[in-house]
Image (cartoon, rainbow, N blue to C red; front, side, top):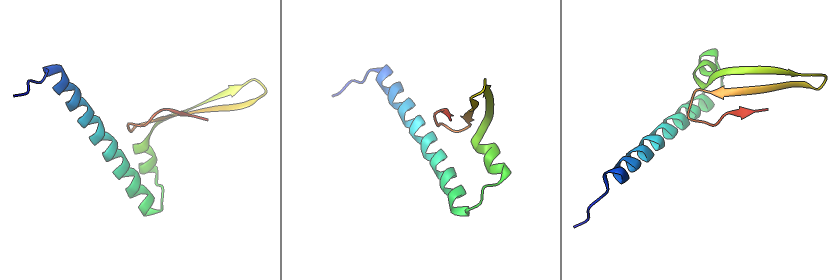
Length: 75
């Protein structure tokens, strides 16, 4: 008989939940790509906000914050 630590079970549940979120996000991206059209609604669903910073004499910094379980991407 194997006894599992209750904390270990909750860690596994968290991992499973995160996997489901990523899979869902990938499904959404696949649907958008398959449509071959990017609509305003798609952008609103994918992107939380875009922040543009002006660098003194050196151009702009753009920060994109995603709505989905993706990392923050800066350009």
